[in-house]
Length: 103
Image (cartoon, rainbow, N blue to C red; front, side, top):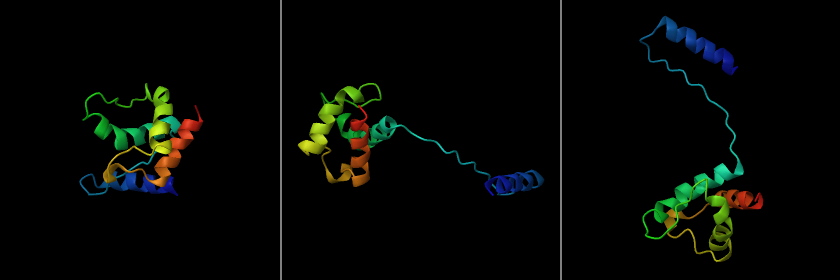
């Protein structure tokens, strides 16, 4: 069905090159647990960690070695992330836990 739609849109846009018809191709991409966890750390943690002195900025390269401290601060001590704006959703917590379990 998607292929037929894309072909049809392609034909229409070639017949009417100045029309407002736009074609969009969606790509299914899968991410590893680490990449998903990094996206959470990047959006919920790095925003503060980069502003504060002596705070570690999370990267794909250092996050595995920091996993025990992340687990302690987020799930055991419940000290991080700070502020209502950066609070983790249940889904984000689950994603972080899944990543930590893979280590």
